[in-house]
Amino acid sequence: MIHPHTIAVIDPHQNFPYFHELSEQFTIQQIENEQILIDNCPDEIHLIIIWENNATVGIELASKLNNHENKPPTVLFIPEITPDERITAYQGGVDDLPEQGIAVKEIIARCFRLIFDQIANKQLRSQVQHANQMAHMAMANTSDLGVNIQFLLQCNQCKDLNELSVCIFNSLKNYDIHCSLQIRGKYEEKNVEENGMAREMESKLLTQMKDNGRYYDFGQRSIMNYENVSLLVKNMPIDNEEKYGMLKDNVFSLLQGLSARVIALDNEMALELEMETIMMLTKRMQKVMKQNEESSMATMKQCIENLEDVALKMEEILPFLGITLPQEEEIETMLTVAIDTNQKIFSHALESDDTFSEMLTNINAVLSNKVNGKVDFDALHRYM
Image 1 (cartoon, helix red, strand yellow):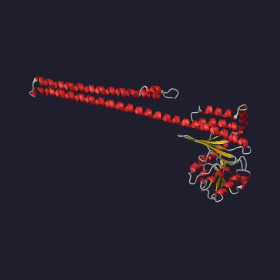
Image 2 (tube, rainbow, N blue to C red):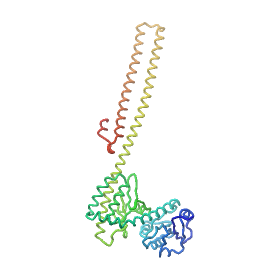
Image 3 (spheres, rainbow, N blue to C red):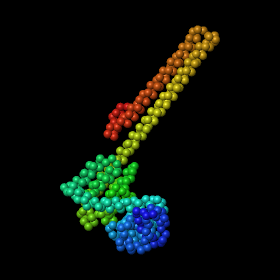
Image 4 (tube, rainbow, N blue to C red):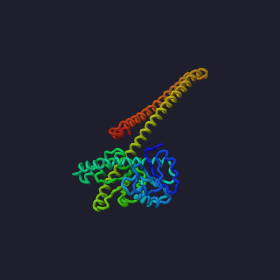
């Protein structure tokens, strides 16, 4: 069967373990002489896999393969790797470093993601020139400060991390830089590229380097960290020191605004979850109150019936007890008072239950009827 995507496998040791599984999803070409790919990689190759036991050898080979511009993504399989070697591999152009013992289904999924990411990037590059021209025309009279202010105004309208990522990438276009973004919210983590997709290599690198200070520079790339946001800039202007410093300052202010909005979204989500919990609690209490009311009614009815039965029986046996008429009347009066008192007690209890149930109903109505997504706390306080 011919598959639409072709993977070149470089396996010097002839022991690549995933050949059969990958061949069911891709067309596999085993490469005996990697110099062919180094000199001129054929266009039909969509992905290169290097199976190597030695990390240094594998990274050097990947660096040679990635010398030309339109190179396909490179996946490097090695048993173990240190953080420094991971950075070196990334600088050498390695797109993914699967962990040892990873499931083959995950490997296949990552291969597809890298291939689709490459296709998306080619489509994006085909529109870059036109998009840049339009951007320069639109921003001709706008300073970097204006761009940042505009972002800070727009980000406050964003309702989730997806909208936030789109908003900041739109602002970053004005600086002509290519970036990978990681947003670490309380309830969600988002990794995203300019094209809207995530890349495993960059995502793991940002996770690993998020606690290594505000700036971590290596070569043409720079990682910027601020609280729950990290940004990898891939094309820093290292040949222009002034532009380099200004770019860092301006982009970092964007990250500060982005982080503040992420914290605000987390707080809004926490408040929403709390309100949902309160609503669930009030509904549960209403249900319990209804059950208690039904149980109280049944108990009251049973008690009254028992007292009435006792009164009837007393009326039947009083003539045979040999007591005087005033004594009979006294006993009947006591039973009547007992029945009336019992009814008053249960009526008072039912009134209390009704009052509490009405309060719960009113609270639930206020929580359910939000105005512009917000609870009317003034109305809620009236029932407290």
